[in-house]
Amino acid sequence: MNARFTCEDVARAALGEPVKREGAELLYRCPLPEQHNNGDAHPSLKINTTKNVWSCFPCNAKGTAWALAARVSEASARLVARMNLEMDMIMLPVVRWCWC
Image (tube, rainbow, N blue to C red; front, side):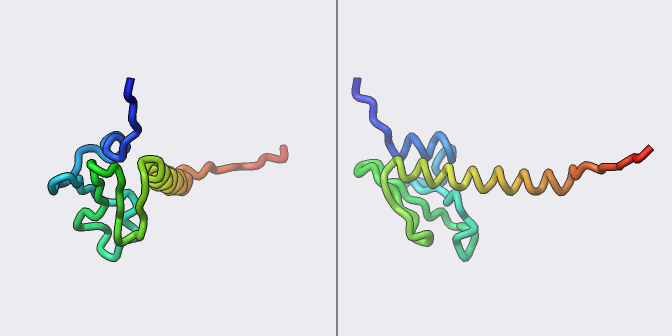
């Protein structure tokens, strides 16, 4: 068994299909678009499937599959926190005290 943890596997599992393919590179939208001036309108997360590395130049981030998994997890955690905050604002409980 030759199981290998690849950047492509992480990206496909977390981000879906690539937006574009250029030779050995897969292009995705960055999972942290708020760190880009243009919201990552042009996909900047590049995965080199030959070298099994990734980079996002606007974020100045790069690394192995493990680093990509951590980056995607960070984006997911931010999204969950933002959604929880929004839900708390929508569903604030009304507490009434009765000193009967």
